[in-house]
Length: 245
Ligand code: G3P
Ligand code: MG
Image 1 (tube, helix red, strand yellow):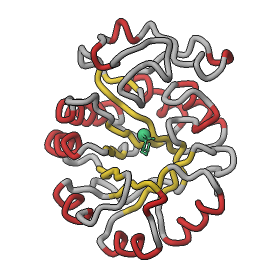
Image 2 (cartoon, helix red, strand yellow; image 1 turned 30 degrees about the vertical axis):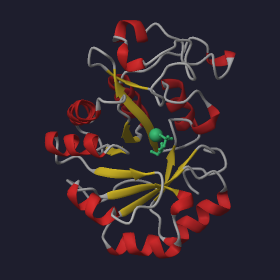
Image 3 (cartoon, protein in one colour; image 1 turned 90 degrees about the horizontal axis):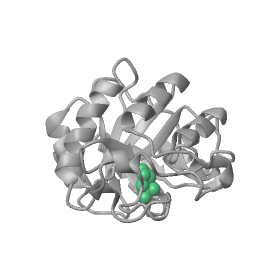
Image 4 (cartoon, helix red, strand yellow; image 1 turned 90 degrees about the vertical axis):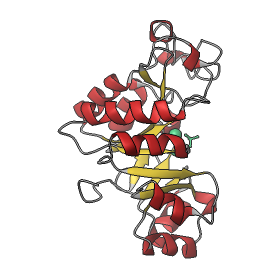
């Protein structure tokens, strides 16, 4: 890691949490309007190597397209509507390129947690490409924190751009967390909050890891986790769990 842990306690999930269509520029604007200073979002590759934001493997849930997004080239993806599924007020919102997201974060002075979300089978390629692009796009800004459920993607990011901080994402507790995070040179563990206990938080902290808990939507639970020593709360309720929580 090239700098001390610079990230705030609260991170807006998918840009604007539940208040905007996830992983869009409009969501980032909503996050900023609510005073948030850090966002999380999901990045993957188009068929032609362009990096854009989408959570699912397929387009069906969060756009007017269908099928596996990573099998389409950017010129096709760029035509889709990524806002109307959420509400007519966001009709016309597009899938954003990572480059556009970096620019928007810069405009708002927001930090970023880039979740590398490879299309099935594209783990290494995606990890490498996202890390290399992030290094260039976030120049002069706080380093973006890279994270992934994919060990292959994180290993490729580590090999390509070792200086960018990495976090291992886990859906549930794993007893080999120490070996995995050491092997990947991770600064943080990002884990579903249901998997955390006060004892586990202590063990992670004693190992020198920072902890991000997702997706925490109840203020009482967010308070408990912060009291235990969790460093970051990733939330959909960006209205209830504000930047100054
Ligand atoms: O990075 C935290 C969280 O976003 C991981 O889960 O499925 O919302 O991407 P998911
Ligand atoms: Mg995510």
